[in-house]
Length: 410
Ligand code: 0T9
Image (cartoon, rainbow, N blue to C red; front, side, top):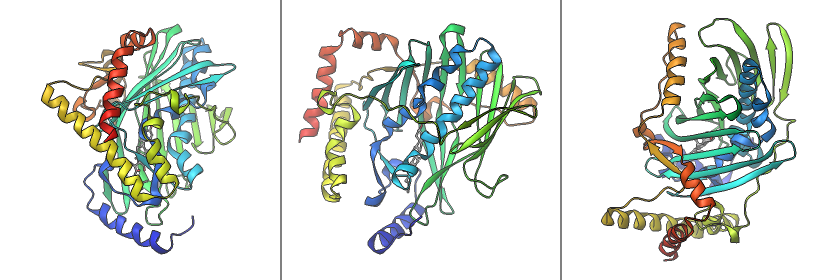
């Protein structure tokens, strides 16, 4: 990576000093201009499905073991997009735009084979920041939903990030659910001004059909010595027999083995992504991310950091004003597509099953994050979605959009 020079070098140095006393709130961190990204975190939900064929592949497997393997393979295929695509495209990890409450990212992928896969992503909480998403393919009956936030800390020149929340995949044809935990990560390359993500610890996937997958991450200087490495196993929950072993690099390629026999390889590098279709800016709702941040992004593109600050403040001040008003009126911001619930039995059962198994193996128990960390347990609200689709909520949505636009105008 190219070393920083001149002003960039000194701003970076003072930035590093400032994060040494970092309080854990990633959003409040003021990063130097060259590290500012032009993508809001609400967009990151799209990384789950940039290979729609792999996403729907499990629905075609009639054997539950092969289905569990297809889910694991799909999950592994998402990691490259999720955790290294900014670095690859932009030269380093960038600080994402901090989504405002109610910010939306909507779109779909069209694929000849997989059909249409829809994406709904919404910022459901601002303090703490939480993004919820629902991604579904009706043709194949595959649905993913989840929500996540981050907890960060800084020590010995790395930012360590723990993700809170989880994802849940549902396959209609088999009425099957998969609980998916989210990996921890840290930011490497900070000293050189070229931050990038490395995954750490592990992810588990537990299915209602009784399969348990564990993925363990390691980076440079660990067991394999290569960056972005992992090794994964698939077994029946409660059985020591390893059905499949998968190992390799999530940014490059990995091999699936049954016993000693290699049965498949996957190349993350060679597998192209399907582009997401989103509405043109002028047709978007004012709450949609690209439209809402357009002026900030234009200012970043011009390298006009004063204007960037001004435009960003407009959004932030408007949001503050809206929250103040709601407080005075005793109302809350109505989430467009998601609702909170008290308890999520499907997920609880899967987590308990997986936890009993890990504990019996002398490993640590699997625990769901306390709802307080994500401002509640968030689920996709089908009723809200149907009402919006049928036009029942048009007036309401228009009013909400106008409120935000008006507040942002001054
Ligand atoms: C959910 C993902 C998450 C979001 C990002 C930590 C991070 C914000 C959260 C966890 C997605 O499904 C997967 C991928 C990357 C994660 C980001 C990587 C990152 O660096 C940022 C944080 C907020 C920063 O921008 C820190 C500043 C850094 C670029 C250099 C100082």
